[in-house]
Length: 239
Image 1 (tube, rainbow, N blue to C red):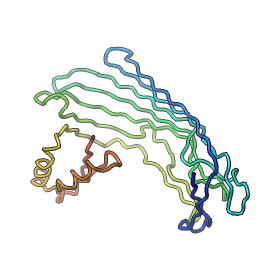
Image 2 (cartoon, one colour):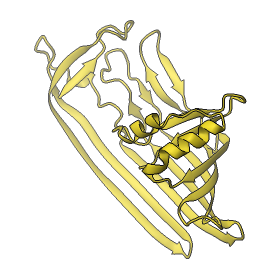
Image 3 (cartoon, one colour):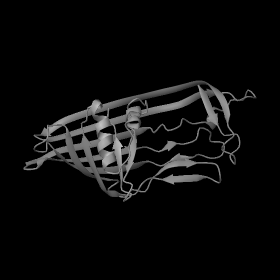
Image 4 (tube, rainbow, N blue to C red):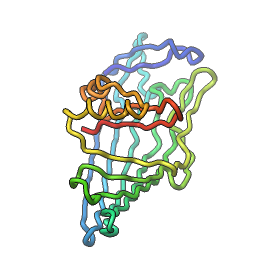
């Protein structure tokens, strides 16, 4: 196991690479789902993690195990999710979703020589209202959603690190003015989608869309910006 540690806290570009002789990681995961009533689905995902270094010897042969901690390894984390089919309306099936995620505090730097840099525990509540099974469209091809993130306006950080006098990055505040349109589009129609966007002054070359399908990072967004108004739409190619 190799550990990257800063040798000079005032210069983030400098780091040491140490070999950790031994580490132990124990964990467990739990997933539960229940159809409580017709149309109401509840689910729980819980994770437990106990990670630590057993032995680290520095270049001088000294045992410095107590000066290091596992990065980004919260002891506890969980997600609660509730999805409810509200009603079948003349314009489609209305679905509500509430999602709450929580994680313990965690270390953000491997070495504790210059202090313990951590992200405090926090939880986020998100909500989504979706219109599915829209009349006139094939089932599963198009759905529209409005959603909000961080509905309780929780203040939290996702970066806390030394360097340049210590820097902290805060998470996004409550966001409630977002709209999603999900289209189940076969791969052979991506070029047609690009052409349609072009006629509406939103340039997204098909080569970019096709390249994203091959990326290992997962579902990545493409920004489609309207050249006249500046309006931006994020396109996610869901696999």
